[in-house]
Image (cartoon, rainbow, N blue to C red; front, side, top):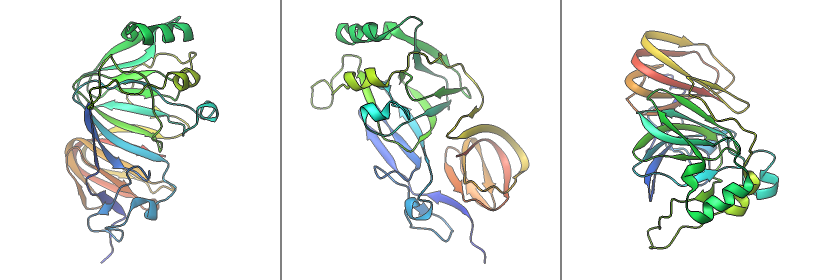
Length: 268
């Protein structure tokens, strides 16, 4: 019997002060995925199956808001160290996000706002709706608000510079470390404020949403395909994908999707 080219994964949850995140599909050493299910790779670490997979796919459950952050891009990482990270957020429920600085904000404004504890005044706040997608390139200042649930696709990087933490303290009762100097080097003040979209196509990945009602065949590709059941459930080549779970289809075969679901489709 032919085994499936569709990989399911063991739970890979990372708790945090603000809630936590599920690393759905990862080859990153900070938390790589383990294949499961009825496939030839069951029990194997994803880096052994697909070592060059360039993305990290997460579901972020922010019980309280995350720190204000910025990630380096391919240019600024040479100054700051770490790995570049461009990402996107797809809203799984309505929620608040902060993405982009208000027009005219510069380095001095950022430094002063960090010191004064009034950084929120510089941020663009979005009352984001379920199904909306926001592109967050490296260099864009951003934060995720309280009670927000997000599907995130990013470059395979765990580099984050914490610019501001809302004047709160960590589990030890002390303020958490900030990375202001590196953040100032990483910020790209020329980036526009992101606007809500339904899909993303950039140098690092392509993301689209599919309203599945019945059957859909995605033609064979030379690239792997990440699939996520945002709502409902479906099967792909006979493998069940329950609501709010991910699978990764290896390249080389048509993908036959069946069911009634809202599906996120991502390819590197």
